[in-house]
Length: 460
Ligand SMILES: [Cu+2]
Image (cartoon, rainbow, N blue to C red; front, side, top):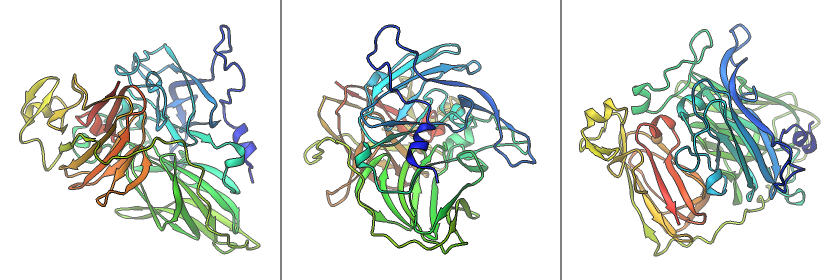
């Protein structure tokens, strides 16, 4: 059974040296984005050309301890496309957020960019490009960033595993389909794949002793697929969402993970010796195993419910009386934009918008405007009630800060960075504008993002 030290030793980027920023320090660890051939499909298919960080899909799991400084050099060796790295869910300085044209210049092919920031929060995060997102993420550019709690604060588990849930749209010869700009995907549920993987394999497998408790860090890197997971042969507690610990781990029978969301589970493997515990994905046409744990004997003792993970240092959030900036989501197939929308400063009718590849609007505007959706002062608390008037679900992601949902009774939901808003729902979030800069606020189904569902928030 791999212990935690071996897991850590497997990571590339332990910045033990050279943190002083001194001239002549060693170059930081590199993430090189480049084409690569890897085995995705079963053995009787050819290998697949993907775009990968350092030749791996998903990219290697970067692992640090809370408080350390992440230092990574992005090298763009992609053919003819700019790139960047967005550190999803991290509370970091704005200039490290990786949004081309908003927080940094695009990294051109053949160029590099150094990312360097302190890791304030422990938890499960991920990294991916924020340029040509549909294509670059769909081709394989995504990886997980785990920030461990200090040794004494880690949960008592027998293993700590990353499970990257993803899907791929491939032709029958295992070639990734290049229809990244398909209007049907943009105007419907996004670019759904036809081949689901866990850590780029058809299924995750592990042998466990009965009674083992594992921490499973589930990350949905798919661009559109919403995973609904069910479990067999295990007790499952939800311990953290989007990297942020829950006050009390709750036992669950089903978990929904929207694109870009993370879920930390604490699971006790309790299938009988010789049997298999399973995590399965509920799809329209059936339920499919994503992870199988072969349980060996002798039987372990059932344990007490797990304790909460140690919380991160979050700001005091008191939404009562705070300024509210409503967001109305419109457009897409079936509803359309009957009133038209503003795009690049021009009011346009739906047909002209569609011809420009724009299908969605926030508050009557497709895409980014000159002015931010919210202009907040540093430290201000902002509420955003979001009304989904479209026929599709949207995974709304705020950069740089985590928010809490404001429930109807005024109570606050867990800290998150990505919230799934279903059709006809009104869901309100509140956050403290705690870091200055220009921060994206967008749907994390990139097909929707690029076709209208993208705005930004200024904190100054
Ligand atoms: Cu969306």
